[in-house]
Every structure is written in C-alpha cells, then in structure tokens.
Length: 177
Image (cartoon, rainbow, N blue to C red):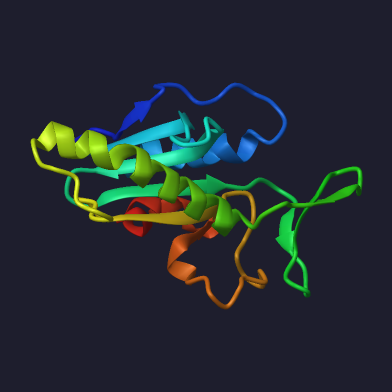
C-alpha cells in the first residue's frame, strides 16, 4: 500500500545555491514523511501589513486539525557560542554574527502570518475577527538538517521538541505532529 504524500508548494525542491542544501534536505524529508492531509509551503514570501516589509518563511506546514507550524531552516555552520550568540561559520573559516537567533526569526514569521491571516480566515468563515483570537493552533520550530543536535548549545528557553536535527529527518512527520 502506497501512502500519498503531503502537498508540496511549490511541487519541486528549490534550485541549487548557497545555503539551499539544508532546505532541499528538509523539503525532501517533509515530502517523504508527511501524509496527504498536510500542505507544506516552501519559501513563502509575504508582505507585513503595516510596514510593507517583505518576509519569507522557509517552511509553513499546514494541517486542518493541527494548525500551522513555521519552520526556520539553517544550514551547515550555524552554531550558538558559549556566550549565547548565533554565528554562521563558512567553509573558508570566515564567520558572521546572525542579527537575530533562528528562534526569533521563526517567532517573527509566526506573528506576521497570524496578523495577516486572521482577518482573511475570519472573512472566509463568515465570522468577525475578535481581538487577538486566532481560530487555529500555531507554532514555530527550527531545523538544522545538516547537523546533529547532540551537544548543540541550545538556549534554556527552547524546548528540544521544537528543534529538528539530522537525527530527526526520518521521523520528521511525527515531530511535526
């Protein structure tokens, strides 16, 4: 019996390029592991309502009953040092400090998407949008598909449940649920 896979949007993995290997690995893991009642949007671009600033969620995983999950994907070389700063170390040894942590990035995308979707969902359901209420469960996660999480210096305010490493790729469907 062959199970049908999640609907992937777009229906192809991203094109090659710097920093895209991790996203292709995660795309393929979602495609293999999530059943047909999931929708996975990759590289979801949006415009923040009040500021006209463009945002991009690496992955938005949607399910009618479970709600949605924004997943920020980080490639090889992204680590957190002993002082708590997130850095990207390139293969040539050069290092850059990330402006915000991957978890803050994912949380910002969740907040932006809830703000944008709340009035649209209310209109489609024929109900009036009330305050901060949102009719679906939502959350965020961060994926490091090219790195093991063993020994990773995760912040104390981050649950291992919302972090996906290379060791989680074969069970990513269960982790998402």
